[in-house]
Image (cartoon, rainbow, N blue to C red; front, side, top):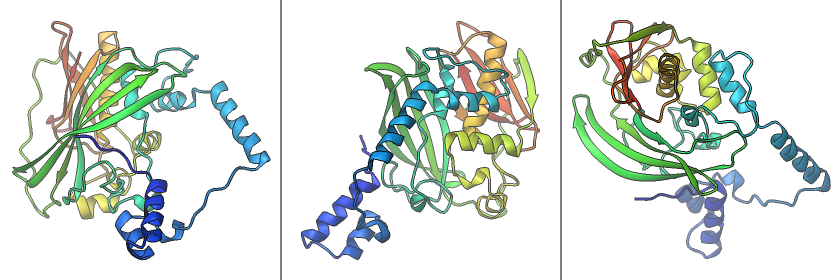
Length: 323
């Protein structure tokens, strides 16, 4: 099953064509195609000479200094004096911080996520969470590469769990450079019912007992904010404490699953002395800022190792395989 993103400009064009053909009123066309009426009559114009020169200079600067994004990620991870010369390999797991979903402010939903229906299906359940991913790295990405990402919806599966109705959506992302596949990822997103006030939490899942190494980190609010900024993540559970407590039923700001995975994989790389050839990651239970998180892993067997993150009570939060 494949879905193609319909841009706001394309929707505006469709609305104008529908009105011109007499199929409906301007108000109805804007409502059906989700076009802001204030932008319905927008007409682009050719850039002036000064604007064209400025655009050309900005493009030249981006070619001369293509490493700013990498430096922000390095600063997030406390990497001192990062050096990313053109053509150098990017750590493979950093791909998850590129290709952010950038939606217009008017297209954000009540939870801060982009509204559904352009690409992700219009599931009626209110809570959207990242459940996990499976990724295999091929040729890798290099500084200065012009990469393309293609996303396809593979499946939409309704289920009934202990917490009520759920819908699992599996998406496949392919990232390529000049026709060469750099990596393939399958990502699972789950939609759930609203939190039930006073509901008992799910029983904790124990962690493996064969840890060959472990270390403890305490994620802070500034760390979570910087990661959300790098990835352009606007989900309110990561920055709006009042919303988190009142609407989601959590005690504090929720750690981004991608940030937990990043810290876990970085720790595993330090311990195993190599970059991963692939990763299988499953989010089991939420983690919260300003609370210690244990990162741990087993000894490698046949080129792979189990790695995981645990909450302060020792319950499993993230389960992963480092390939």
